Length: 330
Image 1 (tube, rainbow, N blue to C red):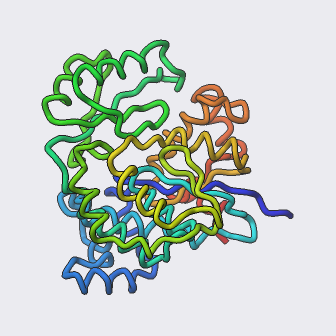
Image 2 (image 1 turned 45 degrees about the horizontal axis):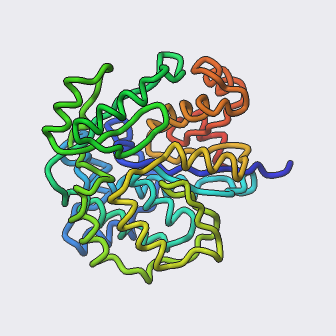
Image 3 (image 1 turned 30 degrees about the horizontal axis):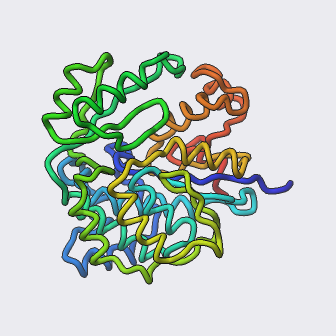
């Protein structure tokens, strides 16, 4: 039987939660732990094997980012390459750092050093944070006019799009703007606890620190194409080291991350047989499903249609789910 083509998606912040505690027991963390020990930080083994999940510890950027990276890369290594030909890689927000290593644009340990450093750098920002607002109805269909209305309100209150998940907008700005938007929004909003104003100009200090400390010579051409948060494709043998480094630590930090566009470009350009969502967790699966429904991909036009396809012949394989993981690994 011939191999199926696959788009690999790397998740970002929020994917390692209480349910994922202990999930790294099957991974070799020794090299990562050595890097953390040398820097005087708690090892991933200690964090993942803790008796209980602590939001103040496990969700802190300096710990969450390396935990997510390690889990995603362990899943990347577990994909059965006799069954799947990975034709492209993308990621959501912090998942871009994992995507760099998963696609071979940086070495595995350098990728970890990037994720580890950016977990700390993500705390360097101006006052503010993020909130989320849905633009869809209960069946994942766009509510007419709602997206445009929310974007107008965001502009009026001083918020900017941080991440576009397709059916959900992640908006960011200072605290006053967040409160003004939430009080006037025509839909319920949720403030993301502990998150900074990611992917906005308020992250300038984070970008400056990254450019000053994380070297361009860690970067190179990817082994497989990568799709970034602008929908741009970084191709093998055609990706300049300096340009990729600068995108990663300047534009990617300071400008909106359009995850929905990245998925749409990947599907239209590479037409994969499957999407493989790496762990930890499967929280990004709903957002991907909404993007597929928005595109009408493979005839999926609402939530029920997506669920029926997933039950019969899943197009999206989330490795954070035991049933779907078994369809991906040896």
